[in-house]
Length: 99
Image (cartoon, rainbow, N blue to C red; front, side):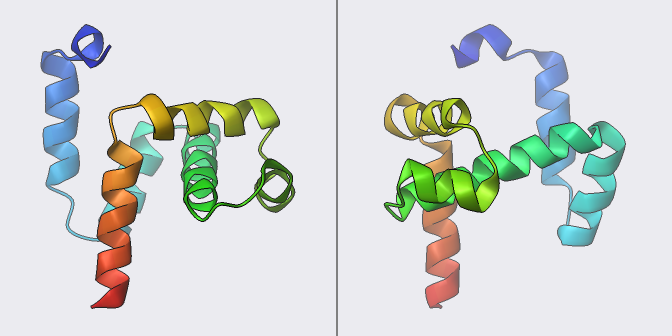
């Protein structure tokens, strides 16, 4: 699947993201690149992934995030059958928190 969307433009975008130095720079860049709704959707999906990794129930997650059960299910599918991107980031953040 990822091979279908990998292209020069996507590589350029990721190279640009990798130049960002802190949260403020990320905020500025993503506010320019994305709509507010796109950012809110990404943030919501990340929160859902965090809560799923903490073994929260769909009802708890829906109540806390406002995400639909369809969104929660999609994120859960990514956690179980995706590219392990969520797991990689969540693990790194947990290690950072423990340091």
